[in-house]
Image (cartoon, rainbow, N blue to C red; front, side, top):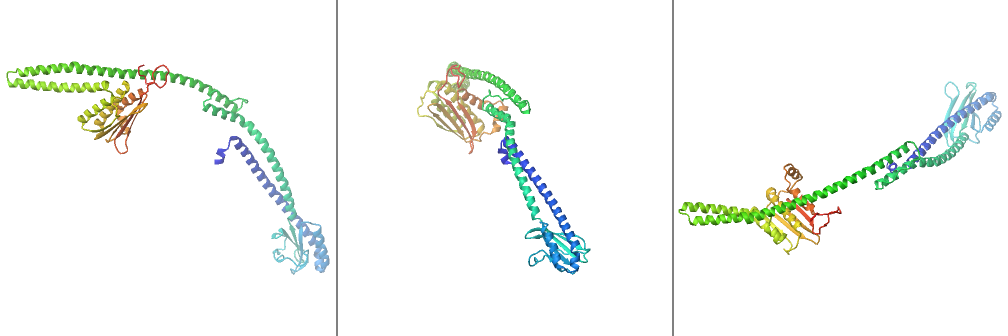
Amino acid sequence: MKLMKKMNINQKIFGVIIASLIFLASALGWIIWDSLHTIMTDELKKRGISVAHSIASLSSDYILMDEQYSIHQLISQAQLTNDDVRYILIINSSHDVVGDTFEGHLPKGIIQAHTPESGHTLQVATLMSDEGTIYDVLMPIEEGDVGFVRVGMTDTKAQTYINIKMKALLYVTLFICVITAIITYYMTRFITRPINNLVAVATGISAGNLTMRASITNSDEVGRLGNAFNEMADKLINSNAEVELLLKELQAKEHLRDKLILKLLSAQEDEKKRISRELHDETSQALASLMVTMRILSNEAKDAEQQELLNASRDTAASILREIRDLAVELRPPILDDMGLVPAIKKFVKKYEEKYHIEVELFTPDEEDIGIEGHIAVAMYRILQEGMTNVAKHSAATRISINMEILKQSVTLIIRDNGCGIQRDDFELARQHNRIGIYGMKERAELLGGSFFIYPISTGGTEIVVSIPLILNKGCNDGTNHNYIDC
């Protein structure tokens, strides 16, 4: 079966026809051989019976008068005139041999090989000898009262005749097989040529050459298949054209979507910066003025109760002022704009440890004034901020490791924790509860042409790997590989 699977259709058709022809020739040869063997055997037995009957009718008187010479002449003449006669034995009623055609002594066991049975009727026995098969015909002489005649008929001549005929049949069969093989070869090539053409066209189309078409020469099933195949190829071209058009439209919409999302993020950052500035400049100054007024009123208070109340109110205002300043820093840390990404990360990590009491190991480049484009710095800071906030809320971690590397063409941020780890079900739960923190981090990275990966650590915990290229491809009209900065 494995060999059949590896063969092409030409070889399969050719092999089936030749195998069928060989099987038919073998079956026909066996039938002919069996028929010839049966016919020749029956004919041989009939001739033996005829010879035995003739000798039995002529040898009766010779046996009774004990004329052994006449008996010898009779059986010798009968053997000479019949090539198939191997031997003739004349046995009297006393079961003594009174005549035979053997030269010298009788073969051992020849007498016992075939003895007359009760009834004294004609008998034919098949004897096996070193010379081949012998059909021994036993004919009673005058119903066995005088004796018996045994004629041994050899099938050597018959077998020679059968072999000659079978050889002739074999040569004819081989000749027919050769002629049939030649005809089959050309017929299979003629039949399978359109199929091979279809295979070649299908291979070319699967390789991307949609201009190939099957050549149609006949109107049979293969020809109709070729027409259907060509129609399918035409529809495939039309379908590909529609798909390419839809793909271009989708790419254009994706391009526009990325621009809108980036502008939205930029607008959010600008709004956070404005709110941070207002909280720091206006609200903080108003609270500071309120605190000064409370301190003055406290100093001028007439009794201790009023002074204590004013001092408590001033302490509350001071706490609110600190929270507002912290909120202003979280919204848009001024150090990120003034000193860069690395100092901003260090300051965030310090406050993070104070707030959540989680140990943080930070590894950053030695040069803190490395210039990183503003959008990349903001994205990295927001991803770090969101990732570490998620650790504090969901992972139950006690230690965080942060590794930041700046290469020639990219900046990479790796955040590891020793918490409970994130599982696939967590993403589905986050989607069901509309928690888009992870997706927001991924979106920020991919909008700048970077990558974002998050997966559990085998020893426990979660690892976030973010990489953003530092070389930005500007120019938003060529349609490929844009970060869409400044577009």
